[in-house]
Length: 334
Image 1: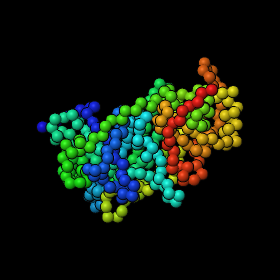
Image 2: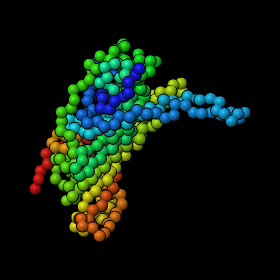
Image 3: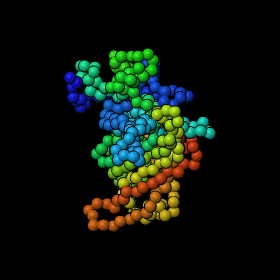
């Protein structure tokens, strides 16, 4: 009899798909596996309805269950580390001056992996994963959390015998072969809100305010979900659409808030730099930003005047929108 699935017995890693490889291509045994994070929290595979219920005019009962396309999606949440390699590649678009596109990835997810019986372990190979939205959020006393939603071409699993030969495309490897590909864990520091990070108009000294206690950044690639051909149930394309960068920063309204009001009303532009950690750690750079709406609220409160200020990014060209993740510089203090 099969056993119950236990918590905290899971494995996750990913593969870069080589540039120029057809979308949806699965990794081979020679593809280099890379770690996600020592503190990944959510890995969720889903799809739309597997079938639609259809009716005929002659009976009130359903006549058919009509199979739908396999609209696979993958949601990932993790705490980034200083040596993170995934964040840059899901945010930055590739640019050759004429065409901007995104890398695609494959993931290997193992569930119940400490169980001695292989039949009680499940492994999921997620191929053709392209990032649709990326959200980074953190606040006082918390780590940064990265949440990524991928559109996926195909999912193969040893839980379905019809897919067994599709796991890792060279031959038919066993579980021992898959485990041999597991990469070494990241060793970099976890990236937290109050630890060596800088949020400002430049990547060195110019902060937005004396106090910032919350930040939320959203990158949207607006992938076209209509990537299915007429003779297949699997996604054939995940074309990157309009780029959008936005966020909110909870900040103190210094000097009575008049300067912030002026910036909003006159649509003054600035760059947003969010350094997620110390020197050498990932940094988000959103160019040509402006605040969305003015608001000054004076209330009965024992704290300094604060507001949650929303902004949008408006890069002037594809190149600016394609290279958003950089490396934190050394911060110079006055």
